[in-house]
Length: 628
Image (cartoon, rainbow, N blue to C red; front, side):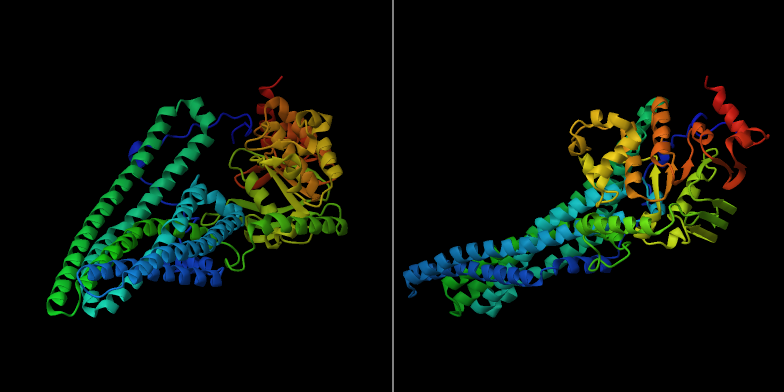
């Protein structure tokens, strides 16, 4: 093995992919795309969250469409009055007034009712998506390509939202207008309705040609957008490495390739849309010609007056606007359908159906209070630090071969253990097994008498907590950032936790105390302070077992020692398993486990392992050779 540690060995320089291979990457297998039937079920479920409001909206909009028919009917009667047919001008004026005022008032009320239904549905969709995302297994999230989940949470949800608030009301209004106009033409004369139906074959042909290509193009466009988002997120996350190796040009070229791929699919969809619009214009010409020819024949035979023919023509003209809108909105609905399928693909991974799934405010609010109570009661009723035991364990990531073999490993309560080894040795995999984030294929894992993979989230939180290399500062007060760990914690407990990990200096760093606003858009928090905050959260949880998975890897060398000392002070008396990035963490631990190729190859104290020829002695020699 290499005589270096993860912290000291030079980073292996990865190969930049050849540009010929950057055309299109498939979506990560970990995040499915829902079928059309499942997406339709989800849409119906969301729309019927307020069923009576939905019925009221349809009734009001239907009445508005019917009232709008009074305007062309009144104009037709006015023509009859001018041409000598006995019509009351007062009646005509009342019809026009009723049509204009009634359609406007009823349409406004119906739009407000429908907006309440749609906004409720959209809010619930966002809540279900966030709740499902938060419930995704960590192993699955690791398998997802960079930016894929972000793309679904932003681009796709936004697309569904835009269609929900814009296209859906237009579709409902246009559909009701088409029905009402058809009824109005049939009342005038059934032949007028037959003339109107001559547009149906033209519309059907246009829609058939459109639907042959549009769904595939929209789905491909969404995939291209997601690919561009993944590439940009990956480049931003790896910015220091990009600068270090001078990969700026290559990364820019890859992003440019993704962007042009998006443009290519967008242009293809616009071509299909233009052809669709041309065929719709042809349908209007065919329909209006049919109505006028039928009207002329009816007027010549005396079966209809000139005013009725005028009314029929005006009705068709009024109809064509909603009709073309209805068909053209298929364009938006196709795009929204592709996005909804991607959003529903995440929601379907939730452990419970959407109609039973807790709202985000419950998951992040009320459940935190329950979790805090459960953690406090569990910590009070169990041994201070449960023992950890693994026997004949074999673990692997989904769809991959076994990468971890543990014959037997026992960690007594209260012991501080450091796990060291080169990159890929299995350290983080062991941490995931202990956390219950990765189920074992064989063997048994015991944390205080229970298998962590079978624990509920509350049970797991009451026994074991992990502080990883990637820590996050939430936008809000310092108090809010700590109460996420246990909502029932008092201000004194929060201050004590901060004192334990940062000493009195935290009061100077956060000048407004627990009310200091931090996170996005607020006071900037350094990487070191972010890690201190994460350690304080671990302290607030009261969990007796803490896993530090390279928790100080991102800190500067000078700050790393402070963080390690802070962790030692804060977590005194708890069982601590440290995935060591710096071997100084191993030297201060009570016990050191050395891993190679997924196995524990050495086990002992720091001094004991230095006395024998072995991997740890080589690691320590390489580590100390670069330091005074």
